[in-house]
Image 1 (cartoon, rainbow, N blue to C red):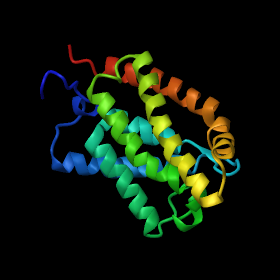
Image 2 (tube, rainbow, N blue to C red; image 1 turned 180 degrees about the horizontal axis):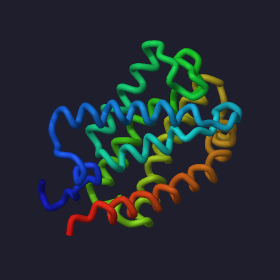
Image 3 (tube, rainbow, N blue to C red; image 1 turned 180 degrees about the vertical axis):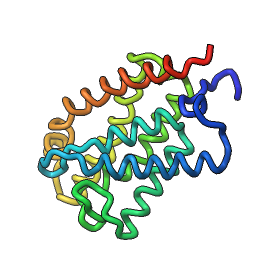
Image 4 (cartoon, rainbow, N blue to C red; image 1 turned 45 degrees about the horizontal axis):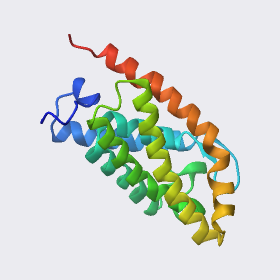
Length: 188
């Protein structure tokens, strides 16, 4: 590990090897899949705990494992497993496909920020979650515009504005959880 890379939270708990990496990727997929089912119906996109699980996993396990887990999650949904919000497959979740694709890129951003030390303090966790959420919103808005033929204002109004408060609450929750987890795993 070079001096510009901070340790990841999960690496303080488990030895880093291929088996552990595989288990963490699969565990993240399961976590995201379960969180996707915890939802508040809204149009055109339900509010779920899915984004919280994507970003929290990325913050804990880092860029590569998080990108693999979100890619596997998308692949399993595309293959027909009902793991997206409302137990939908990819075909049933098409208006939200942009958000789903955004998960991969957001997990890479948050995983990268975690490797730069953005999980040990509450303000940095909030910044990392804001950056990850912005990436998800970008892909989601583009997807809404394409799939529902919405203009930019309509896509932002329907696909971003209603979720800002919920995502702020999720970021605050993560800002409480991650620094606490670091303190609990402190090996000094």
